[in-house]
Image (cartoon, rainbow, N blue to C red; front, top):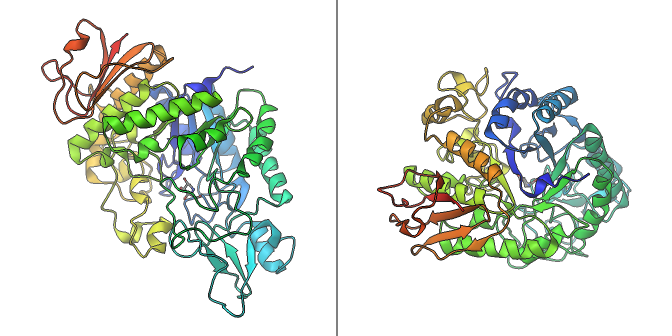
Length: 518
Ligand code: NOJ
């Protein structure tokens, strides 16, 4: 029986290494997640998406998996996973795990066997190997560049072949033309479905299939992960065949389980193709991650998502932050301005029809940590570009749970990235029960969203320039993207449900959102 929970859920992204550390080794773990299920239930979220916790050498924070069926000892054991899942389910919270099918770790058994077996072997056919040309031994097979910087090809230790890695050299791309790769991932899906997970977030869901012959890409071959782009290794039509094979697998299991795609595409039209009824359930909309805080940009992205997803019967899937992008508090401006706008944008998101993802810590109003010392940075982007690109560590700093103590309550053993001192005032302890805190604001917004479900989106006449007003069937939302307060006279007499910032003499302050009962 389907209850369609995933069509209007609030889903919270847990980045396990930075969420809560139960064993005091300075890195978060599954027992830590388990210990905070009560906090997440109070927040009111419907499901968690957990970034990878599988066995991994951690060259890309776990997105380099060496065993897809094992838990990395840093994060615990399979028993810890089962206990965490049971605790979450007991609290009515579903669990979505991350699946990384585009590449494995170079320490995966398959890749070790490929290196041991040599050119032409079945073992090498699971990845993309190409001979080194003796006439041009330093020229890779094509001009593709790694998304983390530098060439996308590395030579085997014997110097005879190259292998492809769209990301770090420790993340060789799997060859999805090989039936063995399909069979293995179907088995991995079943392994986790049998354990009771409620779904999968698919990493680089647009990347597994490469254009025939691996042709050069335009320009110098470099490419951004964050952004919309076309390339012979992204958003190839053949990738949809994979999802048509996976959908019947997940449908075999009871309980309305889902796939959510990380698919960077050129347009909302291309993204909707992943959401056809025989493919995936959700695909993150990154257009609002890329959009400036401006009414016209938000409206354009919202209209495109609603129109295209309606065409395939899929829910819109709204996101402002995740573990790969600068936190939206910081994107929107310095200090109070950024926080005010972030709360305004979040409240608007919570009024949209569809699904909202919340990245851990945004409910505390955390900003990007911009001043991490170079020596603590772990993101391969930083190291592969010689520091030219700062990388993503700044949005991955462990959460502050308490005002005081080593690592502000994250764990008993410090924290793998240092936390800023002013996070004491942004800790859960400091914000819990504190009227007006960002934590209380998120709790209220999520609860009200659940009681006032959006069914449609009808744009209303905007009360001023650079504002957006809409009716979602339950609530009238007004967001002020401008720099001056906006009069709410047009809504006189309506019951106010929530404001992201206190009104200023009855006006809606710059950067803020208000909800009226319809
Ligand atoms: C997208 C993930 O979100 C990111 O963190 C990772 O580095 C790449 N995919 C490679 O797996």
